[in-house]
Image (cartoon, rainbow, N blue to C red):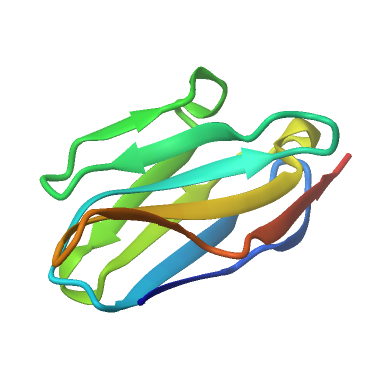
Length: 118
């Protein structure tokens, strides 16, 4: 079994910053990619940012230049630094972890709410 736990969400004013953390634990020998997705009310879940085990990152156009993703492979943890937040960033943010060993699988966290007030 693999557990994925996010933390760090909350309420912030527009222009502020938040840092999300996501830790994976359990039956893990190797992780490929770790990423953040978000889902706003009435909208589909979308990719925010993802990072491979080698450190290659990609971002949604809407967050480029404002958000930064990083990971600590030794701790199976991924972070999302969110700066210059906008009201349209309000959503539930989910962490996705793609494990490759001992068996391939994609695992999601329970989500953490980020609310940006104007």
